[in-house]
Length: 302
Image 1: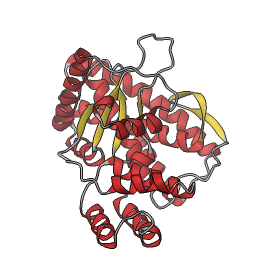
Image 2: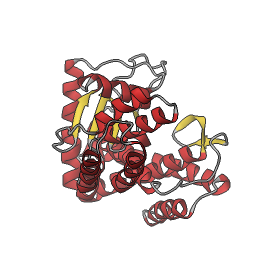
Image 3: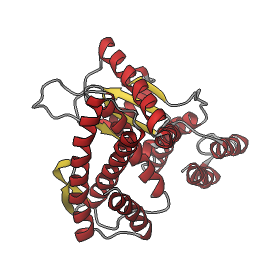
Image 4: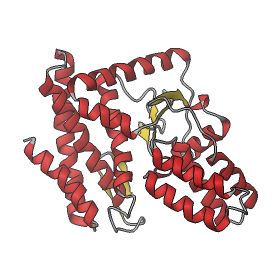
């Protein structure tokens, strides 16, 4: 993903760098830095905003986004923060790309404290029972952003969100998980979307049009095939996470009962989603490879 971002920026800045008031030396330093190591999700977000501004002939905004690309945020691992703890520009981008028209609340101090504790305990659980998944989540995610869905059970809410244009970030609902095992699954789930975004860096996973809608195992409303594909894959990923945690012996008796129940639900949801993908999905070669790996895992898991 970083190589593709750097290559795209090389092209853009070679053509319009002077118009963006970005000198050749700054441009070379920027793309070299991107290739050298992990970057903030907002570097990806600023790139997309820059390109959209250029396509709209909004040179003033494009120059602002180009300036944002030169900012070097301090990156100290996978950061967890409340959505309003970001800068105004980053908070606006998170709300625009993650939440769209959804109404969310800001977690109060008690809810945020409990949420941070669950994250810490979930990572500790994964470190002990499935260290490969814990390492992969940390490698994929730079930022975990927290907001709160409404307390009204009848209100429209969310569990989590990811966006290709903010690669390396996820949004989670502070009220979306009841316990540590739920949080461990949520981390595996949303990081799985980021993994699939990486797999699709060179092209889509499915060739179905976005206006072709299908039933999805994790959503009540019909979804494009790409959404069904994502949901089916991350269900297998959650199943794998629970299976490894169970097999490792790190779960207590209460967690074991919950995990066994969730495993059955994940197996059923995977079967539902995979049937839709098999029947209606027009997959690319990469898409076939990705979903086949999930199928092979689920078959081997018995």
